[in-house]
Image (cartoon, rainbow, N blue to C red; front, side, top):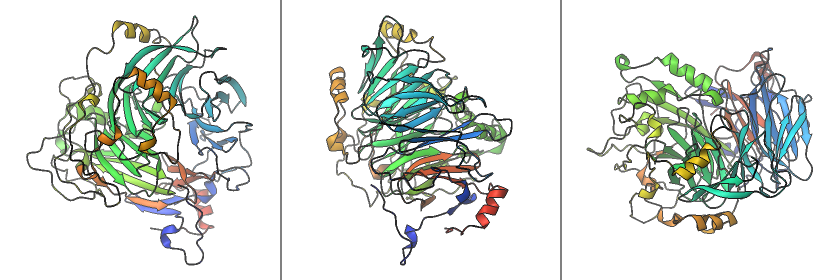
Length: 606
């Protein structure tokens, strides 16, 4: 829902004031008013009927040391600027590139970090009419247009991403519920593509394009029912997390085209998803106003967070605040410097990232480490929430480290004596523990229920065994294996992802249907009934998992928030009015910004 602009005059309540700084245990985060990016005229954009404002960053390794670049869309306009962050004030009079489109609007975009240089960058832009454009905003060139005649898909592009580690492969999702894999070197053809089934499973199918010569799309995925609202690759690029309007998170082994695990929202569609830096946890948010933390290894919900008052539009992990400390100093294998160095470089070197040292350590050492994962969320309630996920949630049945940091958990109950120990240790395979699926253990301790959310009286607590990953050895039959090998030579991986965020405002679980789902039902033998998932491992009741409180929950905008990105020295947010805001981390305010801040009104400190 849209939050109308609230006037501060006339004795407005403090809770409705727009915050310009907030405090966490690290210190004070400050809004840098002179580092705000927007349209050059700085006039609030009339957001009625427009696509969400999105922001993309890239570093071009400029010799001057100011290599950060920012791209954002507002209505029919697309802007490309030098991003000065906390160092200097934004100069909106000098965009490197500006484009205004007619008959369509940009909906999403993504830079190829692998190929970016000071001379050229590759930027993919998706549009409301279904096309995808490849442009170079430095050279001000438009190199290619995909789905130009809308023969592949006629619906809005909801997400576009380069495949990690690839210079030429990218994924595009549409409001139709389909996801397509493209190669920039191939054409799209002059007729509508014909498809051949490659792989199908529970509520998903993958098709290849039938043609005499290789053409786009290389693969077509159909997942779940209704729109696929967002997708995200795991840090190592091997797995793909998709959230859909049917309320399901589905995680796939991308190369094997195999379902790894699923989770169901408490209510309504899931709108956003992200991975922890080590790939062990996934956070999703959506129309139930919650953030849900899901364990990749255990394939189960381990916590929910309640702080938002409306739909959650973006979730993101803060790679620079996420930390690990040793529980027993004498037994720690690997240095803190190694892990911190991994975290610092992880965010911007995402395409070249490998499995984090934290993940490797936990796969070989049964002793838990003292971990704090920081993640954030923004929503249509105009609020920013920050959350800490600590070892008392990750290892609920093990002794807590004496170095444990504070976590806001809305329960103080102890684990049930004799309850099964939940760890992420895998001793059966010494290579990559993420390739195997540990057994799923239920949490038996009594946990609080939320007073503000609906609750079912259904007492069923049966696990849905069909949703446990196979973890099997035989991935495909010979025909499917042959089909996959055909694409193995395209680039680093045979990859294709499904994401589609048709953000239906009045959607509810009772109205989940689409043309694509009708076709899908012909391919799949079973369909999960959302009404029957509550109280199962797919969707535990509120009292069955810990309920997190946010570290902070502050109103920071007049209109719904659409962007949250964590950078090394700041975090970036954006709202539907078209204002991109930079929040300096504690101690990271630049000299010029400090001077500018001193001359501007001070914000509310809370």
